[in-house]
Structures are given as C-alpha cells and as structure tokens.
Amino acid sequence: MPKVPPPGVSVGPDGVARCWWGDSSDLYRSYHDTEWGRPTSDDRRLFEKLSLEGFMSGLSWLTILRKRENFRAAFQGFDPSAIARFTTRDIARLMRDEGIVRNRAKIEATINNARRSSRSLAAGGSSKQSSWRWARH
Image (cartoon, rainbow, N blue to C red; front, top):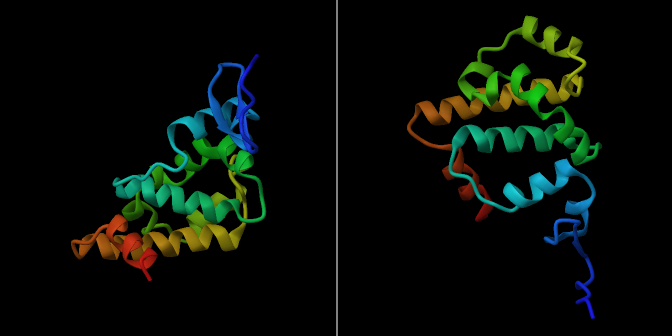
C-alpha cells in the first residue's frame, strides 16, 4: 500500500516529496528543490532575492519566476553597484520593459536599495551581515 504524505506535502511525478506549492509547475519544482529555504552568502544573489521579493508584492511568485531572466537582464544581473548608477533614463527604460513588472515604486525602491547596499559594501560590509543583523532584532 502506498505511503500517504503528510498534510501540506505533495509527491510529484518524479517521486520527490515537496511542499504542496512546490509541485505545481516545473518552475516551482526547480525553485523549491534548488533555492527555496536555502541560505546564500553571495551578496549579489541575496540582493536579487530581496529585490524580487519586493517586485512580487501583490503578485504570485510564479509570475516573478517566469520573468526572472528578464529581471536579471534589466537590472544588470542584480549587481548593486551597477544599479546604484541608474538614472531617470534607466527608470524610463524599465517602465517600457514588458519583460518585467513595470511598477515605478518598485523600480525606484530597487535602485534606492542598490545605492544603500553599495555604500555598505564599499565600507567593507556585506548584505549578508546586514541582513542577519536586522533579522536578530
């Protein structure tokens, strides 16, 4: 008799047990299995994750995952020092980019966060250290 997974767990066609949401599409499966819940010590990857979480507000994570490569291209691979140099011209470019979420407040927040992150990194800090410092409070 097959074993029944606990509530909230789904066993996919590949036989892997995942959170119920992580088995609904190939994008979710990949994200669940390789990224979700895993810490990162890479400042650029952390900045990407935080930025995409901001863009996701009010939307589904699947929407963001589908646009992720477009976001990476539009935001210079989520390099905070590159994004920190974005100007009003870049904001206008991003507002025309149909491959990303075109929300001016979210775009401006990402640029502002990049500027702050760049200052921290230039001072010898890291996004990881800063994030964990805030998480402990």
